[in-house]
Length: 106
Image (tube, rainbow, N blue to C red):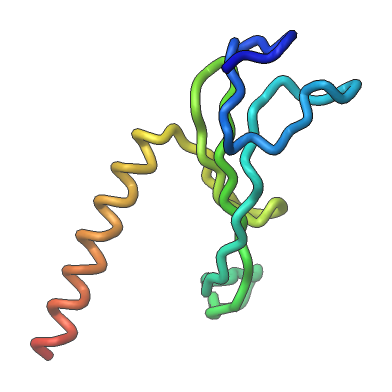
């Protein structure tokens, strides 16, 4: 499913970029998905404190392959390959399960 002038030779159905628009990026990018999170906010000289925030998850594909960005767009983010995210998710789930199991046993 290629498009005229598309350097990848295909246009995925999740891409929201209008590549035909003058000056548009050649990168394929999905619509961002907002995620409500609680994070530890650090301020110089003060203890970290839990804070409600919103991060955005964005799938994109460029010449180097598919990537998933999760971040707030300003101070913090992770932008990893899909395989890396699979490993991060697996370890995060293991650690969450470990905590949950210990919380149930006291």
